[in-house]
Amino acid sequence: MGPCAHYLTRQATALSADCCNGVRSLHSAASSTQVRRDMRECLRQVAVWYNNLRDEAAQELPGQCGVSIGIPISRNTDCSR
Image 1: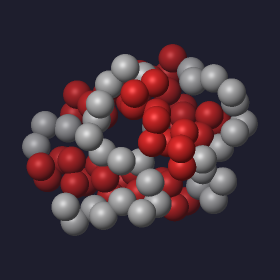
Image 2: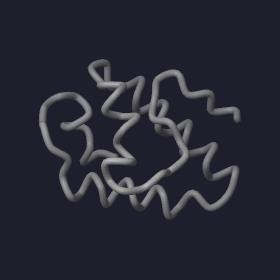
Image 3: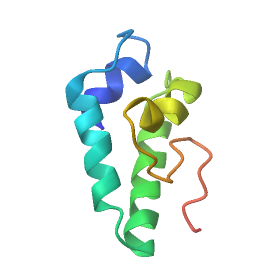
Image 4: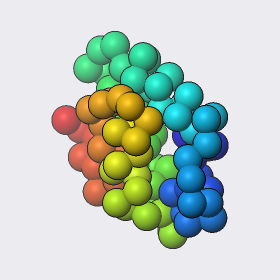
């Protein structure tokens, strides 16, 4: 998700190919419930770390890259589910 940081924090206005490749990799790796829980926790921590993260951009990111990862990217994600 590192290549997405500039877009998610308003430092870039367009998504990079590397960003979407990372999102697609997450989609491919989400193979089990435990892996999805681990990913949610990781993404939640990233969202908390970036103070200026645009929540709406983060939530729309997978769709803009053509995938549905089923994992909300948000500071408020409940990682126990």
